[in-house]
Image (tube, rainbow over all chains, first blue to last red; front, side):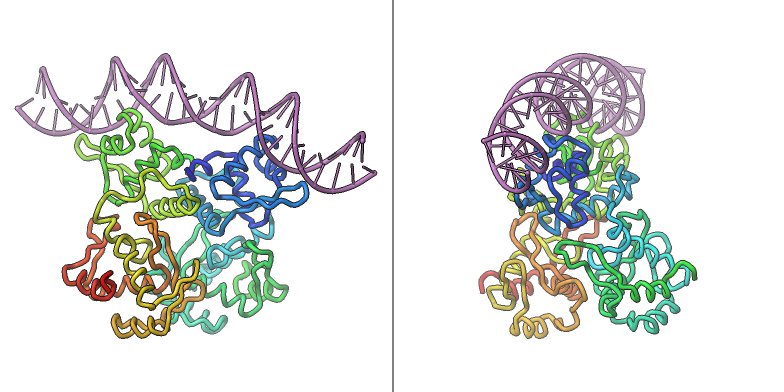
Length: 223
Length: 223
DNA sequence: TTCATAGTTCGATGATAACCGAAGCATTCA
DNA sequence: TGAATGCTTCGGTTATCATCGAACTATGAA
């Protein structure tokens, strides 16, 4: 059973350490999980047999990575439900500072900057949040058109909402999802403000010097 | 830890029984899981404490249901990964015939009819599938415009693919997801061919008499 | 070769938790 | 009332499995 594999705390810690998308060696993972190499070895072979991990031998090292983006999605979903139920994990979120700062969550911006963006947009009255639902204000529409050349009208989708609050893995607060969240992220990359990290499987988003400046001008906390 | 809750076989069986969206009593769930009522009671309180289930008292019965559509989504995702890794579950898919026949998977059609539709569309060369990816052919575009008044051009989305193969929970074969899958499902409801079941939380899709006939005319296996 | 490092396998131990029988509440019906 | 049903709580038993020490294999370096 897959869920049972993820259920063990030691294994869960290993999987979380791999959520960065990077591959880690068996001993690194043992340290992450706080267990001896023997125990780690046993866990890793189980996870591999379960299809959650794949292995790459290199010299005397064995690198493990999540076998599939779907697995990462599953883990993030699991975290989401856990957080909502008040079951905060002991180790909350990624340690990699780059990943905490800005990363992709499905197709929109997450991490420190993602949370900051939603906060700022609410403060500027571009968005209005009531409980779960978020709606775009008239000022918000104008802002998007003027500052980012995004026309809100083109973002309607039969099922997917325009705006949605998505619980941030590292920050434990909401960031902006929905078609608008996705559209803004694509705009940032088009404008060359930001780019997804090139290492395959990585979810890190790197902002350029000027990109971060422009972003801060729009969504900086000193508003 | 949430995953550990789902990891236990007895609890997993209960959760799967609740995937229909209907609420079941504690003793019904005990039978589903093949355990005594005492044990079931213990499991159920754990699941409730974990936020996966919610309870409704009614007379001397206690009805349990999945607390959230997200939970159902999580379970379906878990099943998907398990199936891909060759870890077929003992109890595969729903027993409810209506649910096997046609249901909602996120926002598109799943179940017997969903699988049948994708098969037929490939047979008619409306879609071409190579491994994971599915693409719409020229004939496919014409077909959608002529028969369902769907313009493929309007369905482009920055991140979400037009067509995507989604592993069917009950059938263990692919059905059509992506923006096209979603658009077709909305069209079916608009045309009053089908409607989601009215009981809250249910994922069953009911086809009308004429709806099923029209559907079969387009995607029937006798082609 | 020899030594060191990375990782695995084996065996024993210990803790967790699933399980059920028995008894106890609570609700409904007669 | 009392009896029946649905469900929970309690206690004790049992099995599973995570854990680690020790010994073993494999790769790389001296």
